[in-house]
Length: 60
Image (cartoon, rainbow, N blue to C red; front, side):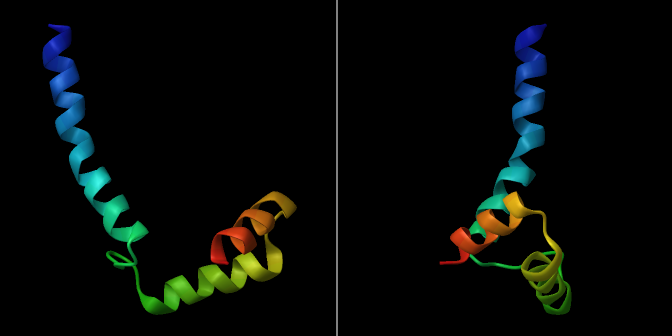
């Protein structure tokens, strides 16, 4: 029974893995350019210190 649940969980994660892989490689899906620009502006101006640090270091 647990093998069936493990298989079901693996299959359920495939779309997530595909979308994350595309996103990590710069392919924008299910988001607009304007929304992404707004997110970047928000991260630069009003993020908490930890998120701002991670954003700046990820952008370089």
